[in-house]
Image (tube, rainbow, N blue to C red; front, side, top):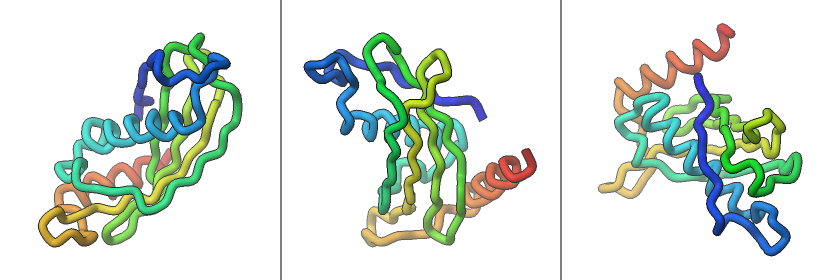
Length: 134
């Protein structure tokens, strides 16, 4: 799957010209949400929450990058959740962060975790199988 490109914004920078460490989470979230919606085509992409998030800051990210590319993959697929593996790179390919998230699908009416619809489950299983085959 192609990486998701996310532009850097002036407000992302701290006084030293670095992207603020908390902003990495926002950039990853934007990429992850776009990947679920557009990359995987999930109908339930907007009904999820993050139950766990891990991040390793690998190298400096500055405004010179102008954007980042985020590769997202499924590490594990559960009944109502999935664990992702994400890598954020600058345009020259430098890895700036690695992340893992547990995404829980959510039923807004019951306010509880819920299995994704059958068509979304099939898309997730297909994406996972494609990753494992490569």
